[in-house]
Length: 261
Image (cartoon, rainbow, N blue to C red; front, side):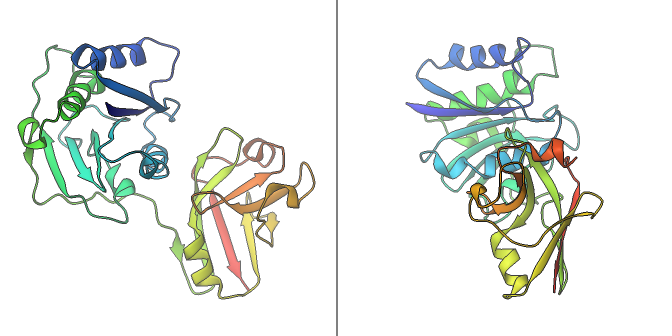
């Protein structure tokens, strides 16, 4: 049984998600749908890309990932299906793949040429992506549903931190369900620049400071702030048993600055 995952900004309040799942099951009952999340902030490509990047390798080979965020077709937003790292990804080419494919190259990419059965052009995940996913799930090849793209260039997107000899400047890329503020600074980058030096992590209006990395939340007292690398090796600002983004006033794209002494 093929697995199709869904990552969207559709939410669960309206009928949109149900319509998307109905379109999949109407074309193939022999699939398993897994909801990664439907709470991506509207049109937030960075959040969507990092969400997929952080978990797709946990899925079995040949899993099909539908990513429906900012997916309306336009001159700048082509619809593509990508095979990379043993997985399929179906989404708009809107900068998303610069995040997902940041550290490896795709094996095959096609520009989708699926004809819609409706005249509505604003629900690509239901009318285009679901059809592409079911075709792949039935064992179909990418060449049948799209034209091979040979000169695909990953669109640039704000993902990598700015690195200087004594400073790393990053941003907050996600706020998770616990209120942790997750950054685009990974452990390898941190250690390569640190070189055993002391450091100061500055955020907010740079009047908040942390001078150590914790290995677990309970290293600090309840309601105290800490910096920790999460299970995907991204630096995050947290509060032990508290909500960092609310209590510290942190939000998407806020700057995180690390100074090495």
